[in-house]
Image (cartoon, rainbow, N blue to C red; front, side, top):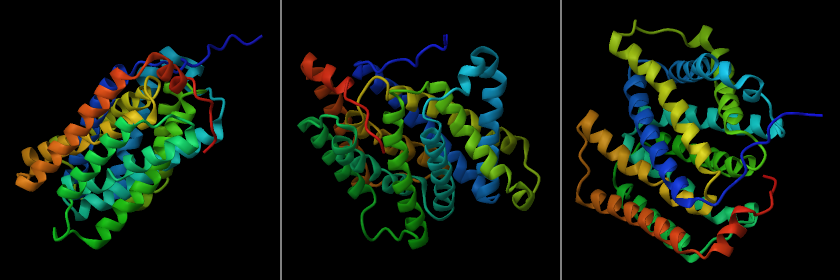
Length: 311
């Protein structure tokens, strides 16, 4: 008889899910900004490798002694590994994009992804997509268009890398919700780190070159792994408490954080039109949170207990 504890069930606590996703987006924006700082001096696969290796070592040192076998035990191993591979590819594409474009503009294009998540969460995840989610998505998408408007002089190859990131990030988002029904958060987080560490670690003999890092750069390299670890933990955990269609608009807060950190670190201050776009993104988040609180209890229970679908 197995004594393995079951993964935490999905529960209907939308506000808790929203708080977790807000923290995750802040850490993701920090990660993007630090990534851009480092890829101006070092090659993208090297920076990505150090991020994932640090992430993995942190989990082995700080989490494994308490979680033991639970950190590696999965029920749908194949899908867990595919999810991890999606994030590894997305990270590589994001690094190449950030070499060629500013943080805010790159992030704006990436956040076409949550719109696609809303469109797909109904047919693929059998989740109810209400009018509030559509309104929030429309506001967020409108904000993206203002921030990344035509005529901005963006690098075409950088845009192509970013659009590739959008495709694999949508798959990662959808699988996060699907796997939350059967898998433990800690196991998904570990395999996400391990896949990237192995994939980019294999390439280190060919990518480990460049100038010796300064003490500050060493700290920044380590912080990539720490922020990725904490950010993806909060992100994965948020999907246990709220449906994908509700969380997707809140992902747009990443844009606001990215604009702020881009100004703070690189001196890039958004113009009036871009600030209007950020305001629309924030409005979308408010609509999402408000509609989540107003949904009747039966609808919330139905959304939380929606049957699992395959991706």
